[in-house]
Image 1 (cartoon, rainbow, N blue to C red):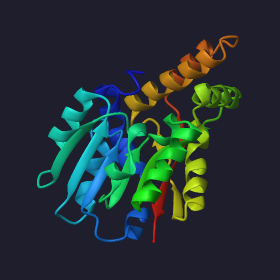
Image 2: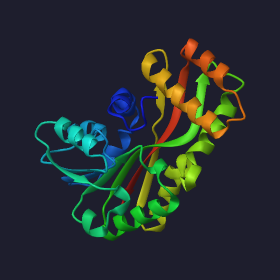
Image 3: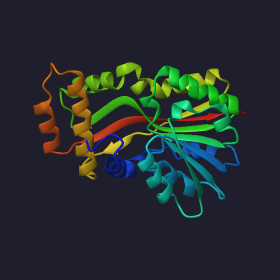
Length: 250
């Protein structure tokens, strides 16, 4: 893979992200939504997807610890949207940082956090009474057409890799939803799967290399080389499970 947070990889996956996110949840957002804080914004793909679907005016605070990605995100936000950048680790945000935000958003972030970090994020959102839309958390469900007998073995190794160092990985979406419910929020979730295949061969192949590579790192005792060669020789249809979580403090 070109790098989990590299601009090239983020650009490659952006169309699949946009297609997967749940439009249904946008209709449930309380109005007004004028101030949006985007956590772990990367190159700003979520902002480019969401901003045109919200009324103007909008003020986005783009938060990421990577300065170069922040600069790209700020430069590529849609015209007519006011933007500020905030270079920091999103796990260090406080109630004061989120106070005044109509919506806190993120994309493909929760599965990179620990339970303690999600608990802290839930706590500061609850204290600030900030509604949140967390999109594209992986669920660990991966389905191929055609199937291969080793799919489940690779999937399980990859999911174990995602849970390394106490990260929640594929458990993050469900964990966050339950934590927000305990904090008093109304929580609505929707499936938001990636649908890969021959229609996007470059993305599918890059995703396969990264998916199998992580599995091999987790299980060096297993040889996944033949599996990867077979899967990339003829690009399969793949459904990669994700979930979107909307939380509302009424």
